[in-house]
Amino acid sequence: MTQTPEASPTPEESRDDRPELAAHDHGAPTLAEDLMLALFQPGSGTIAGENTLFYVLGGAVVTELALGEHVRADDDGAGGPRVGAVVGHPPSDPLLRSAWDYVAEKPRSVQTVLAAIGPRLREPVLDRLVERGEIRREHGKALGLFPTTSLTEGDTGRRAELVASVREVLVDGAEPTPRVAALTALISGSGTLPQFHREIPWSSPVIARAKELEQGNWGAAGAAEAVTRTMTAIIVNNVIIAAAVLPRNG
Image 1: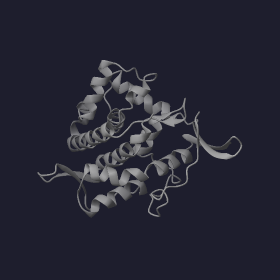
Image 2: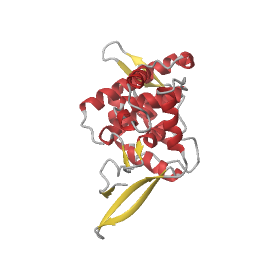
Image 3: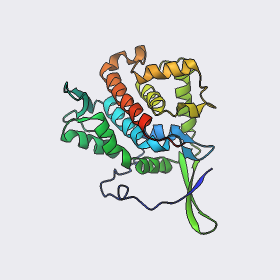
């Protein structure tokens, strides 16, 4: 369990338009929540890939919008694929709605969308996980003086279920649901999969299968979601680009 000094809220975190939590209504967890929970490392109390987390969470939000057919890929033929909102079909979850409102203004490149919505997702998503009891946030003091916050795993068992579903796809060859395929592709695209080596063996077959999912090759179960698979592949590819150029830590 790692303890770190509490930082003062940044201007971005203090903005009044930060997405509302809305976890109190006990709605289904978003893909961003599942992704952060899976990336949480219980042994150290840290989140894998912290330095690129904002891009990865942004990717999860846009991917879920694609899975729900709230957004589409618009290819203008010049700057490559852009994300456009499906008019009249906003999501009900406030976390997703904030991103949908942004792309509803006008179609934008995936990189632009990720950079715009990603930086302010970490705390709202973590707050939801804490509210659900999936992660515990414990406050203390270092040297008896300095406020600290540490994260520990909750007792819901959900993280183990998520990692098991990813393992079944990558190791056992199970055919994934679109949601599990997207979750696995995002974990792989973030570059953090090697950190799961105690739970998911890091091997050549695992790497090959993960790359297939990154490219939208989900198997027969995904045949009916061709548009969603294409959109997910576009998003994950942009996450990979971001993860490659940003410094990694943890």
